[in-house]
Length: 445
Image (cartoon, rainbow, N blue to C red; front, side):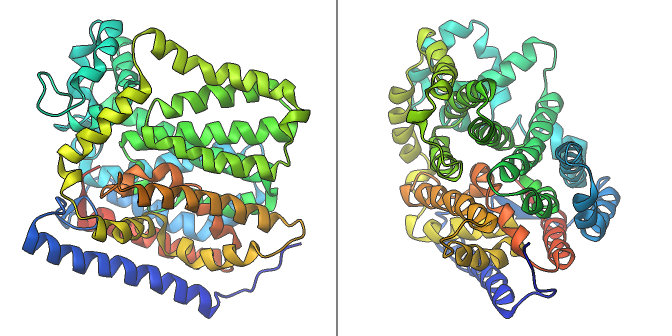
């Protein structure tokens, strides 16, 4: 039995205050750099957003959901039958994300988010012959070449864009359908993390984490961002891995491989999800040499997406090296590494909220326990996500916009909040931050 103190400790409050100071410093220093040197290319650093206080049609629903979630979320998560909890978590997360997005209205909040100049829907017409387009995909990655892809199309493997092409082909074309695809799938990431946490730690911690997975400030960017879709695919790959290892399930091993392969063909940077996958292997105490029956379906699933794209003429490694060149051709080559190396972490503090910052010292303390404890397992999972995020940060390939780019890692930091006492107060802090962000800023994603 895990006992929690009824009130936050001073250390919890100090950690949350440190995150607030980090974010404040990133705003003040970033504003100075942008005003003087114009090298950040964001209007409200460190976030890709602009100051625009407003309310919208989603405001009433967002306020109601925020209040109800903070007040009743922990009790509901504790009492629901387990089989219902992931579904309720997914549904509640969808409702929270949609309500926040609709603060900007249907048009600006969802329907046109994926039709901006550098987003995926603008190039659907160029995929009329999909095999031919994939064979020539690499030829259009660099800037300045004829028919150069927009920034985000060039910056991702073609499975990202191809998803929206296929949606269009089956009659679900346009920004509204694409936006809701990202919202609904992105919301499912919370259920995937919940399932993995139960398999790797215990059910009580999973239940305690559920309201925090739903009501995270990250929901602001899970609304109609393609990175929400990427986060969900990666989360389900890891959840399938956890279930395959703990239940010795062949179908889940195959599904893990398939989703892992797809993850890497949605975003180059998501190869770092393997860091969290390694933690899952450790937590499941998996000796794969003793379980070859699981390895074979995993490898078979893992091969599917690379083989299909390879046969269609797309080379992942060649495209990645071209992307690095393209990155430094654009604003990535101008944005100062010295600022973003720590301002990116401020973005993470914003999307995961003060509760996560408060919980991280408790997570670090849990890692010092050498005996088996569910909290230690949770801490290792959170620590692996933090390590993957730090590797991405040091690479210099994620300067700015990490409030959306790092969503696949951020959702694995949120379970740390299960270690906090007084969850209602911390949930109130989480939803307050999310409401302030969406009502005061017009985010770019």
